[in-house]
Length: 401
Figure (cartoon, rainbow, N blue to C red):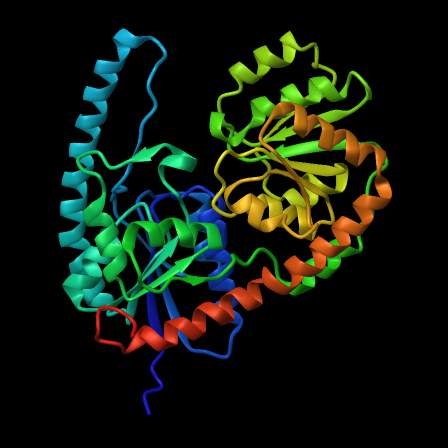
């Protein structure tokens, strides 16, 4: 019997502490708590990050080597004459990224050959370096599908329609999607191949129970949490608030997250909401710095793959008003939240409904908490993924039977 530990090399394409990396930390914590011998290596493109520091504190090996996404974020100016120059810059950046990945494939293959992993695990669908190296080393490869691409982050394939990338996803050993909605998206791209749906682990069960004991605040405050971008919906949240304060002038909104706030600040001044809107910036722990002080969460993202903030709000017994689309609709279904139809007017109506119906809030949050406790604990997340990983560890076939 082989008692040597399983060795998993995780790849992540960025080093900030956003959803994918927070889920990766949770997964590693969960796997560490299992009665299993596992060694981890996390490969990342940038050095000296808080993410890397957290991993090192947990005694996780890290390897920093620059590599790039297969996809590229593109935003074009409203000033039409500027767009051709932007396009040329994007092409230049894409060519640089392609050369970087060619070098990464060569050198990382050598480094991982020395480390001798049992499998490679790509923590996102927007890069293929992990897959390419797994093929070179004849290793099983797990691909965690977390993003739509264009719909949520305005990502495109710079030199193609992405067919080659999707073929790689179809041929990988194991595919894991973070929601049913994401699974359907990729099924349309890659055809009839199995995709496992496993919701992200958000909290340990002990933390879920601690949050259940916290009381709500009395003053009605809404919050919207996430990177400040157009497609995340902060602008719509402010516009909806301007309608709510016509009836309830003391209603406030916390905007939590980092990013360019200039347009939001102009809108806040235009709507005379300086006393009603608070730009809180980035916080390190929403359970300590946000949820104890607010009454409800808005999820206005146009195409949320799953919505970690939605689940965190449910875990903190805060009701969620979410756009009735993509992964958000999946999470708030069956009375676990309030769905709005995408219009500012309907969002405002749902906000007013929460203010006026506290008994409905208690019923909704209790139901939502029970559901996320059963489906989004780190323990359950790690157990499900570990069970799948065991199946592919020694599988020499490029795809699961």
